[in-house]
Image (cartoon, rainbow, N blue to C red; front, side):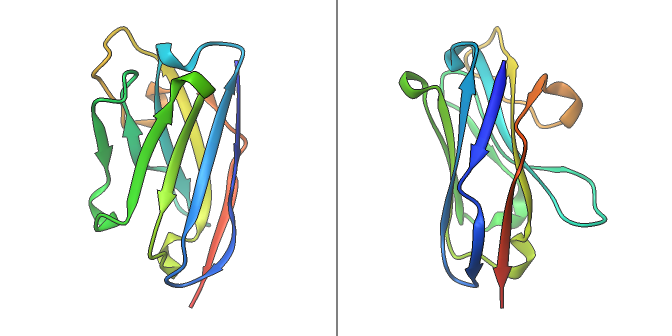
Length: 126
């Protein structure tokens, strides 16, 4: 199983980006997915998570409803729409997946995930 994340870039504060993550080697419909980010010198932290079915989602408190996680199992993809970006959103963003028996469960910890994408850099200038 491999995950490929892309869509990062250098933007100005207030702009938007849409990150994409594609799973290769298995059907994404069996996996719960998550987006994490890691700023320089800091731990990797959860940004958003989505259940296998897509029916339940989680967002970290600091996002102020600016981000939206979604998935398209027909395309083996999970996405993170990021609006009104701020300099504090600057980080490397990682997608992750893990097999989930439950269709409605999401996962929040790095050690709960089995597979990781390579990361995509998001830089927001002020």
